[in-house]
Image (cartoon, rainbow, N blue to C red):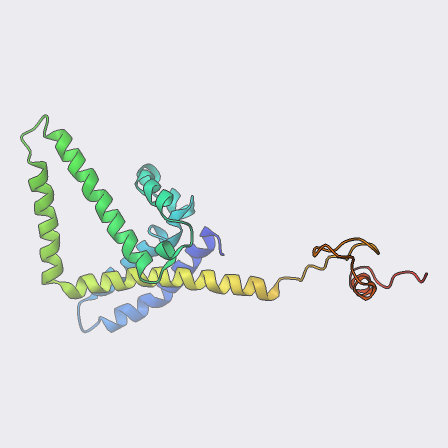
Length: 210
């Protein structure tokens, strides 16, 4: 599959081609939607890549916050349907990140409540309620953001698939010479004389005449 820099290049090139289209479609509406789509697409490819399940470039970009993805890497096998699924992978990363952020926020507020008069559960609950109201009031914005996020994952999976296909299609065949006369093959029986002769012809040229 392509390395991280190749994936980054694909993300940036496809976003560059998509930008005029997105803003062109939003000239009669709200250009903010186009900006939201492009931002979600870039975030998906550069920060929330399918390769967060390994020690990848996208994982290193989180720097001090990369610990957020340690449990994800331990629980999700690399290139499994949980990380590289067309819909499941993108949705799982969003839910996982939201869950980790909520947990850290609650832990931080709980720690501060030891020093300050804070209601950690109430503050976290209020934030989640505000997000839920935003989704209900502006479903089209959230749908566009998720669609663009999912498209970043689709492009990643498509590039992996094409790369693997091309490598298999243009890879040079490996020809191994057969054993010497009477030497057992991988099946355990001596190789027939015609098999040995064909193998020598392919790998080393015609064998010397007896």
